[in-house]
Image 1: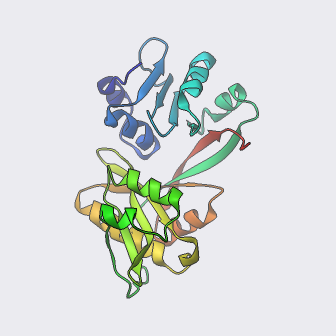
Image 2 (image 1 turned 120 degrees about the vertical axis):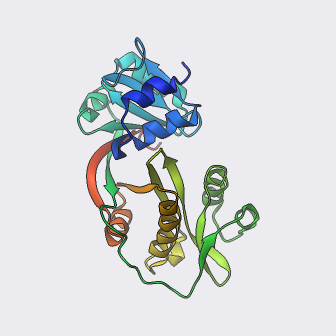
Image 3 (image 1 turned 90 degrees about the vertical axis):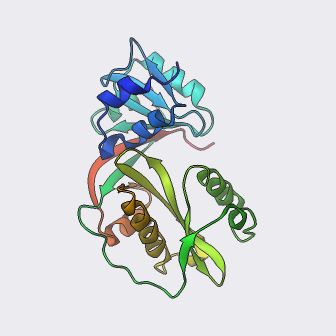
Length: 240
Protein backbone atom coordinates (compact mmCIF):
# COMPACT_ATOMS: atom_id res chain seq x y z
CA UNK A 1 0.00 0.00 0.00
CA UNK A 2 1.20 3.54 -0.49
CA UNK A 3 2.73 5.61 2.27
CA UNK A 4 0.38 7.31 4.73
CA UNK A 5 2.77 9.91 6.02
CA UNK A 6 0.85 12.03 8.50
CA UNK A 7 -0.20 9.19 10.83
CA UNK A 8 3.24 7.59 10.78
CA UNK A 9 5.03 10.88 11.41
CA UNK A 10 2.79 11.50 14.40
CA UNK A 11 3.47 8.08 15.91
CA UNK A 12 7.19 7.70 15.18
CA UNK A 13 9.10 10.36 17.14
CA UNK A 14 11.94 12.25 15.48
CA UNK A 15 14.72 10.52 17.39
CA UNK A 16 17.93 8.83 16.14
CA UNK A 17 16.44 5.31 16.28
CA UNK A 18 13.78 6.17 13.69
CA UNK A 19 15.84 8.31 11.32
CA UNK A 20 15.69 5.75 8.49
CA UNK A 21 11.98 4.99 8.85
CA UNK A 22 11.04 8.69 9.06
CA UNK A 23 13.28 9.50 6.09
CA UNK A 24 11.43 6.95 3.96
CA UNK A 25 8.08 8.37 5.06
CA UNK A 26 9.16 11.95 4.42
CA UNK A 27 10.20 11.00 0.88
CA UNK A 28 6.51 10.33 0.19
CA UNK A 29 7.41 7.35 -1.98
CA UNK A 30 7.77 4.47 0.44
CA UNK A 31 5.54 1.47 0.99
CA UNK A 32 3.78 0.56 4.22
CA UNK A 33 2.82 -3.00 5.16
CA UNK A 34 0.35 -3.17 8.03
CA UNK A 35 -2.67 -5.23 9.01
CA UNK A 36 -5.22 -2.56 9.96
CA UNK A 37 -3.52 0.79 9.53
CA UNK A 38 -0.06 1.79 10.67
CA UNK A 39 0.80 0.75 14.22
CA UNK A 40 4.07 1.17 16.07
CA UNK A 41 3.59 -2.36 17.42
CA UNK A 42 3.35 -4.13 14.04
CA UNK A 43 4.20 -2.38 10.76
CA UNK A 44 6.81 -2.28 8.00
CA UNK A 45 8.11 0.73 6.07
CA UNK A 46 10.04 0.07 2.85
CA UNK A 47 12.04 2.36 0.59
CA UNK A 48 10.75 2.11 -3.00
CA UNK A 49 14.11 1.71 -4.74
CA UNK A 50 17.06 0.90 -2.47
CA UNK A 51 15.51 -2.04 -0.60
CA UNK A 52 15.88 -0.60 2.91
CA UNK A 53 13.01 -2.02 4.97
CA UNK A 54 12.33 -0.84 8.54
CA UNK A 55 10.36 -3.16 10.79
CA UNK A 56 8.38 -1.43 13.53
CA UNK A 57 7.38 -3.79 16.36
CA UNK A 58 6.38 -7.34 15.47
CA UNK A 59 4.27 -7.51 12.28
CA UNK A 60 2.77 -10.82 11.19
CA UNK A 61 5.09 -13.15 9.31
CA UNK A 62 3.07 -12.91 6.10
CA UNK A 63 3.58 -9.12 6.04
CA UNK A 64 7.31 -9.61 6.46
CA UNK A 65 7.37 -12.09 3.57
CA UNK A 66 5.32 -9.72 1.36
CA UNK A 67 7.84 -6.97 2.02
CA UNK A 68 10.71 -9.31 1.18
CA UNK A 69 9.09 -10.28 -2.11
CA UNK A 70 8.76 -6.60 -3.08
CA UNK A 71 12.18 -5.57 -1.78
CA UNK A 72 14.31 -6.75 -4.68
CA UNK A 73 17.95 -7.83 -4.74
CA UNK A 74 19.11 -4.97 -2.51
CA UNK A 75 16.75 -5.86 0.32
CA UNK A 76 18.03 -5.04 3.81
CA UNK A 77 15.78 -5.30 6.86
CA UNK A 78 16.40 -3.05 9.85
CA UNK A 79 14.98 -3.98 13.26
CA UNK A 80 15.25 -2.69 16.82
CA UNK A 81 17.21 -4.40 19.58
CA UNK A 82 13.91 -5.40 21.21
CA UNK A 83 12.47 -7.15 18.14
CA UNK A 84 15.34 -8.48 16.05
CA UNK A 85 14.98 -12.03 17.43
CA UNK A 86 11.35 -12.08 16.29
CA UNK A 87 12.39 -11.28 12.71
CA UNK A 88 15.36 -13.64 12.92
CA UNK A 89 12.96 -16.50 13.66
CA UNK A 90 10.89 -15.61 10.57
CA UNK A 91 14.00 -15.53 8.38
CA UNK A 92 16.16 -18.54 9.34
CA UNK A 93 19.47 -18.64 7.55
CA UNK A 94 19.70 -14.89 6.99
CA UNK A 95 22.80 -12.98 8.07
CA UNK A 96 22.56 -10.57 11.00
CA UNK A 97 24.72 -7.51 11.65
CA UNK A 98 24.47 -5.13 14.64
CA UNK A 99 24.35 -1.44 13.70
CA UNK A 100 25.45 1.10 16.31
CA UNK A 101 23.73 4.47 16.21
CA UNK A 102 25.98 7.33 17.31
CA UNK A 103 25.20 10.95 18.06
CA UNK A 104 27.44 13.93 18.67
CA UNK A 105 26.73 14.98 22.28
CA UNK A 106 29.15 17.88 22.23
CA UNK A 107 31.15 19.76 19.62
CA UNK A 108 33.20 17.93 17.03
CA UNK A 109 36.65 16.91 18.09
CA UNK A 110 39.27 18.89 16.22
CA UNK A 111 41.01 16.85 13.55
CA UNK A 112 44.19 17.37 11.60
CA UNK A 113 43.53 19.65 8.64
CA UNK A 114 45.61 18.81 5.60
CA UNK A 115 46.69 21.34 3.02
CA UNK A 116 44.42 19.47 0.60
CA UNK A 117 41.12 21.34 0.17
CA UNK A 118 37.60 20.08 0.91
CA UNK A 119 34.62 21.47 -0.98
CA UNK A 120 31.40 20.41 -2.67
CA UNK A 121 31.44 18.45 -5.92
CA UNK A 122 29.49 19.26 -9.04
CA UNK A 123 27.87 16.58 -11.19
CA UNK A 124 30.51 16.75 -13.92
CA UNK A 125 33.28 16.10 -11.43
CA UNK A 126 31.59 12.88 -10.40
CA UNK A 127 30.68 11.61 -13.86
CA UNK A 128 34.16 12.27 -15.28
CA UNK A 129 36.18 10.95 -12.31
CA UNK A 130 38.02 8.09 -13.98
CA UNK A 131 39.81 7.10 -10.77
CA UNK A 132 36.54 6.42 -8.89
CA UNK A 133 35.25 2.81 -9.10
CA UNK A 134 32.01 2.46 -11.08
CA UNK A 135 29.97 1.22 -8.10
CA UNK A 136 30.97 4.20 -5.96
CA UNK A 137 30.47 6.59 -8.87
CA UNK A 138 26.93 5.29 -9.37
CA UNK A 139 26.26 5.70 -5.63
CA UNK A 140 27.52 9.29 -5.70
CA UNK A 141 25.50 10.20 -8.78
CA UNK A 142 22.37 8.89 -7.09
CA UNK A 143 23.20 10.70 -3.84
CA UNK A 144 23.71 13.98 -5.67
CA UNK A 145 20.01 13.98 -6.57
CA UNK A 146 19.14 14.60 -2.90
CA UNK A 147 22.28 15.93 -1.21
CA UNK A 148 25.37 18.03 -1.83
CA UNK A 149 28.52 15.91 -1.72
CA UNK A 150 31.56 17.13 0.16
CA UNK A 151 34.90 15.87 -1.12
CA UNK A 152 38.55 16.21 -0.25
CA UNK A 153 40.86 16.68 -3.22
CA UNK A 154 44.38 15.33 -3.51
CA UNK A 155 46.39 16.52 -6.51
CA UNK A 156 43.18 17.82 -8.06
CA UNK A 157 41.23 14.56 -7.70
CA UNK A 158 38.40 13.89 -5.21
CA UNK A 159 39.40 10.97 -2.97
CA UNK A 160 37.08 11.15 0.06
CA UNK A 161 33.33 11.75 -0.07
CA UNK A 162 30.61 12.62 2.45
CA UNK A 163 26.89 13.19 1.91
CA UNK A 164 23.46 12.97 3.53
CA UNK A 165 22.25 9.36 3.40
CA UNK A 166 18.99 9.99 5.27
CA UNK A 167 17.40 13.11 6.74
CA UNK A 168 14.53 14.06 9.02
CA UNK A 169 13.36 17.36 10.43
CA UNK A 170 16.11 17.22 13.09
CA UNK A 171 18.75 14.68 12.11
CA UNK A 172 20.83 13.53 9.14
CA UNK A 173 22.71 10.28 8.63
CA UNK A 174 26.33 10.48 7.53
CA UNK A 175 27.60 8.51 4.56
CA UNK A 176 31.39 8.62 4.20
CA UNK A 177 33.61 6.79 1.72
CA UNK A 178 37.28 7.15 0.88
CA UNK A 179 39.14 5.51 -2.00
CA UNK A 180 41.10 2.52 -0.71
CA UNK A 181 44.55 3.89 -1.45
CA UNK A 182 43.83 7.12 0.47
CA UNK A 183 42.50 5.62 3.70
CA UNK A 184 44.10 5.95 7.15
CA UNK A 185 45.47 9.39 6.32
CA UNK A 186 42.87 11.55 8.09
CA UNK A 187 41.11 12.53 4.87
CA UNK A 188 37.76 11.03 5.86
CA UNK A 189 37.74 12.94 9.15
CA UNK A 190 38.39 16.23 7.37
CA UNK A 191 35.71 15.54 4.74
CA UNK A 192 33.12 14.54 7.34
CA UNK A 193 33.93 17.63 9.39
CA UNK A 194 33.32 19.84 6.35
CA UNK A 195 29.89 18.28 5.76
CA UNK A 196 28.93 18.29 9.44
CA UNK A 197 29.72 21.99 9.75
CA UNK A 198 27.64 22.71 6.64
CA UNK A 199 24.63 20.79 7.97
CA UNK A 200 25.05 22.36 11.41
CA UNK A 201 24.37 25.75 9.83
CA UNK A 202 21.06 24.31 8.60
CA UNK A 203 20.17 23.25 12.15
CA UNK A 204 20.58 19.52 11.46
CA UNK A 205 22.25 17.17 13.95
CA UNK A 206 24.46 14.33 12.62
CA UNK A 207 23.78 10.64 13.18
CA UNK A 208 26.51 8.08 12.55
CA UNK A 209 25.24 4.57 11.89
CA UNK A 210 28.01 1.95 11.70
CA UNK A 211 27.83 -1.80 11.41
CA UNK A 212 29.82 -3.82 13.91
CA UNK A 213 31.54 -5.42 10.90
CA UNK A 214 32.98 -2.00 9.96
CA UNK A 215 35.33 -1.14 12.85
CA UNK A 216 37.03 1.57 10.79
CA UNK A 217 33.76 3.50 10.62
CA UNK A 218 33.19 3.11 14.37
CA UNK A 219 36.74 4.26 15.08
CA UNK A 220 36.29 7.34 12.88
CA UNK A 221 33.01 8.21 14.59
CA UNK A 222 34.71 8.01 17.98
CA UNK A 223 37.63 10.10 16.74
CA UNK A 224 35.20 12.88 15.83
CA UNK A 225 33.52 12.72 19.23
CA UNK A 226 30.44 10.61 18.45
CA UNK A 227 28.99 8.35 21.14
CA UNK A 228 26.95 5.17 20.59
CA UNK A 229 23.45 5.52 22.09
CA UNK A 230 21.42 2.75 20.47
CA UNK A 231 21.71 -0.51 18.57
CA UNK A 232 19.71 -1.73 15.59
CA UNK A 233 20.08 -4.95 13.61
CA UNK A 234 20.46 -5.39 9.87
CA UNK A 235 19.11 -8.64 8.38
CA UNK A 236 20.27 -9.64 4.90
CA UNK A 237 20.47 -12.71 2.72
CA UNK A 238 23.66 -14.71 2.68
CA UNK A 239 25.74 -13.90 -0.44
CA UNK A 240 25.42 -16.57 -3.12
